[in-house]
Image (cartoon, rainbow, N blue to C red):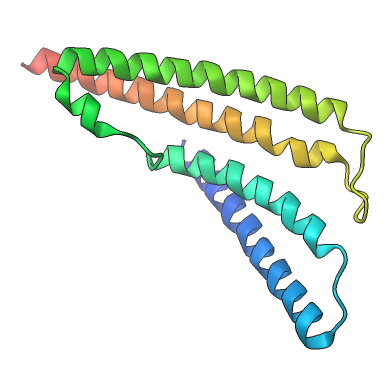
Length: 157
């Protein structure tokens, strides 16, 4: 899982780096040289989708997604664990469904290309199934890990 997480993190960081460089280049060319680069807006949009989806994977890896712990902390331990498992299972189901729909969308758009760069929309839309599937994998990983820790903690008491 460590390598999987590093690949997601590097990919998100690299896409963000390229996004920043392209944006700075676009601003420089437009306002200082007076010759806007036509392809930068299209490239920025593509990169932003990948940054968001891969960033979501990294956030799940680091357990940094937004939560509302106030309600969960009010519940007794056993009920809290049951609800956490149900939420994780529902999240995994939703993410897998999202990945499936995203892949279907990418397949349907594979022959459609962007106006300026002529990149297939397949590669743009593929960010959704990749991000959703990877996030589901991490959610399952944390669910299994937490269940193991919970089981060993119950046996110790």
